[in-house]
Length: 205
DNA sequence: CAGAAGATCATCT
DNA sequence: GATGATCTTCTGT
Image (cartoon, rainbow, N blue to C red; front, side):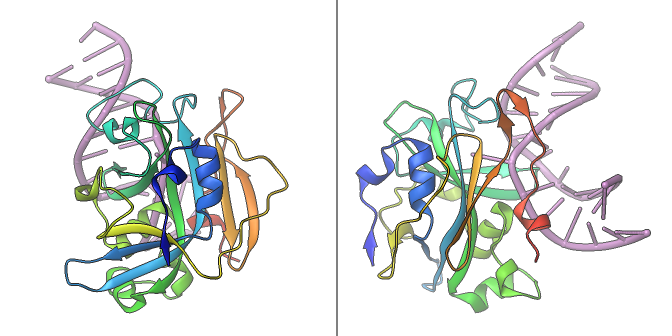
């Protein structure tokens, strides 16, 4: 599997969000074990989005978002969860893609140990669940995603996603595995906050 | 310094 | 559909 190069990330978050779908997130844990999953849901943020952490400039928390593309930005959500973002664009521009769901691939037994769920498809479906399953937390902030212990690569069977709509900020991108792509509005649209059904609660089929 | 809101999730009805 | 857990950040005084 080939690791994604720097220039992949140094593009607009909307583009990176689209092209991250189908790639593999890998984590070499302190124990040496490898856990991984296919990225199946993403969400783009940048300085133009009122819902984005970087909308009002740099703060201690969001500083990684203003770093160069290709790094980790992890933040605490609702005091309980960690959420994993991939920074995008050039240095000094605030942009990132939130990783919202994985299809578990390797280290599934470890994921099950960390998350008690009945079905494996729930192991990493949702941003908070994803970090719990992968064993990722804030200590990974600003880590370069081209190298261990946390990196993203392209699988051998990768096929570029097809979209009928143009992805943009405030739009959540997802694929039901295998390969049915969805585009869902979220956060803010046309300056107004809209209801935003979370994957975890509403895609239970 | 107090208070509210939040890129969530599990659990309950 | 509603609620609580739990904590950081931001805003207002």
